[in-house]
Image (tube, rainbow, N blue to C red; front, side):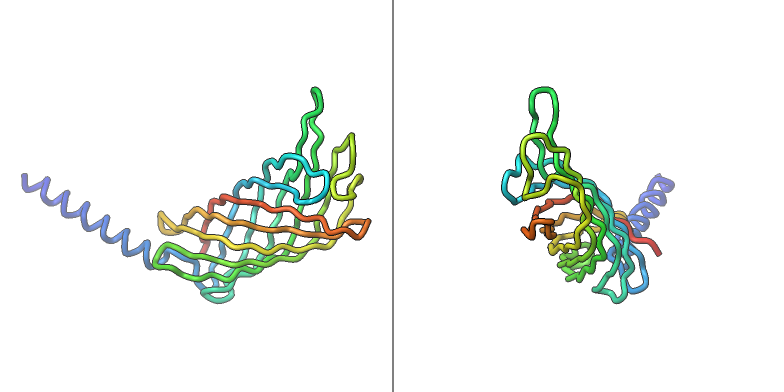
Length: 191
């Protein structure tokens, strides 16, 4: 009986210790690195866009202050998909951008953020019937993004993030191509 009480006491102490440790390093601070990777639902918002589909993304950055992060993001977003007989007509975008995030802390494990990015957008159309947003062929264009999100940190240096991001870039026809991405990311803090 005495052994069980000691083991229970040690277990309670470890749970208490881990809870305090989680609150101490549950969010990234100055000089730490963060990495987010995950999936998203993406949808083009231009003329002739079809059903949205799936996207993949990754972001790696360094905390310059305890609230400001600067890093590089990349992804592969299928923003329009249409099934024609046995074939799929799809339009994908590959963004590679420098992104800045500004965090607002809500307790020990929750952070909201706003973000902005600028970079190169590679359009990858596989189209048969008509252009989407005046784009028929692959091209590289300058563009940007804005967004907001929420990170929930658990297990000390791991977390899950939710974000909504709006992307835009010029086309060869001087029309603005735009799409949104609703993301779910797995987040890591590296020391």
